[in-house]
Image (cartoon, rainbow, N blue to C red; front, side, top):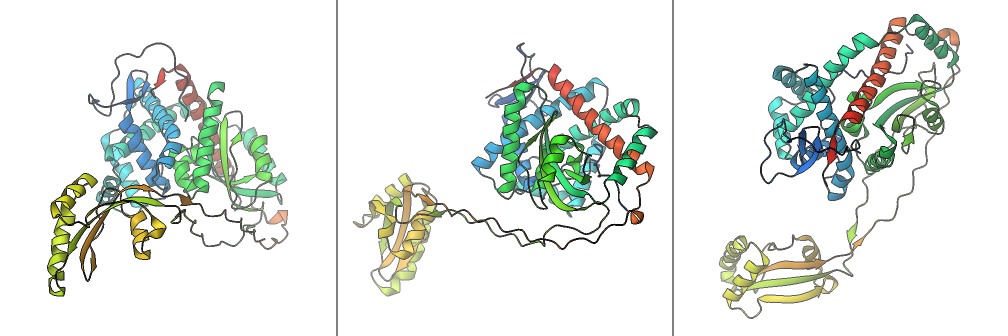
Length: 479
């Protein structure tokens, strides 16, 4: 059965923080905040403040914990560059959640701990693990369970606030349903797209540039191998965020002109650059494409993902400052004892200074500083060791007929050779779908159309509500 594009309700919490898939703050006003306090706990004397939202603070540790959760969600590599790309959007999300919790408190809306526990239990089930396994995984990634609880609490609180508003303000008339049914009939045979999106709102003109950069950072993260659905769940501000940004099948005329135009130029598997609309920036992913009314996909056959080539050390230009401790073996029979002595010594070395002290204590002339060496001049077996062992940590014990050697690298200059850019794979055309007979198209029931229209209206209402909260709030970002 053909149906309207599926817009996931803003009240579907179960997958909002799903694991194992993975902005710009509002303009600060000039008045000084009241004495800040954090609902997550008392700030220690050494705790740095990342932002102040009305009379509450977001600590730097809150930001770092949420970044680690976002990296886990997205399956992204934990690097300084990735954390830097995600930090602005993580901070904006934390500000929004604090505003949502404050509004829920003002309206007398609270979420019992039992409801939060049940939601986290569903998250664990969806990831095919028990609650203890989920908590162990978070702990292994240095993510406090309280970070996930706070995210779920904010989401559930905001859902209940919005449920009140929807009961009062969202009404769908028969004429709106009739108009949608006429549009569905007019679109038979025209292209439709299976689309997912990441949406970042722009609440005032002075935010535009920063939100655009945040959207571009997310696009770059996806292109580097990040999981689009997980990033959408973590950062998108549309109702479909809970289902990984899924918008379902989208037809001509269902989106605004800017997004319609962008979709018309895309093919299955393609990711768009950020698209500006009146409300913010959208990043679109076309998962599939077909003529409306046909079940035949126009997506190319799937190809297995190729591992991305990694930079390699340039051994011809690499230089290291290396030191050694030599323990000679007077005879072949004593090699085993010398090896045991060297292993015990190696385990006691904690730094380069420690290495120097123990080398002097050995009293062996060959032990000590070897100076700055060109890696290409070392024996082939030592080249990878010289560029691979951690700085300031002793190497494994190296044995030879003459005794044992322990090495340490205290300084290293290793240029990297970047891999050549990969050629874009040529798309493989899918077979043409069979012609469509309008008489074979089964129209969706009016109740389904009404439900989807309610979800769309609720999404728009939620965006406006949060925008108004940002505009009236005091938000100060601390650098």
